[in-house]
Length: 145
Image 1 (cartoon, rainbow, N blue to C red):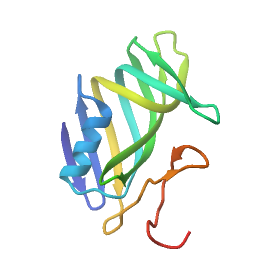
Image 2: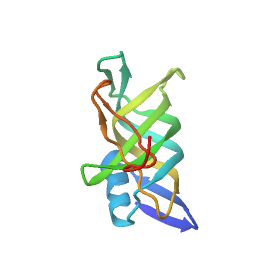
Image 3: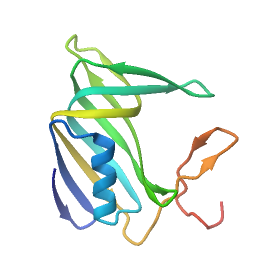
Image 4: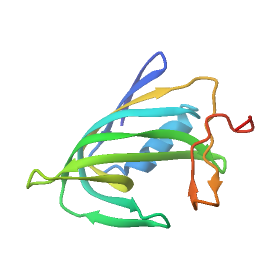
């Protein structure tokens, strides 16, 4: 992976075969990123698993054929003392049809270009909200709701 910083923004290039979530979490840990927005990403996934939230659980769909990433967005927070990466995306397959949703897993194919906007001095949380059964972004953990 390559990474450059300009103020509060980072441009990353992830390489073929890298696990998207492990690489972004490792980046956040190394650079002490505790609050960030993933503004966009483009590139390719060798394989990916998207989920659709049906109100109780994610219904996963695995894509085992490489797909071009046409959109990637999300956030980086902290959960249980570690980076928590939440991503949604859209990909196009060889038939040029789009598939997307909540990204559960992905392996980079060829490369992935990602822009991240950090919020220095802040920490976003991602506590479990039992009523939904989901971890939800908390912009001011420990503060007032």
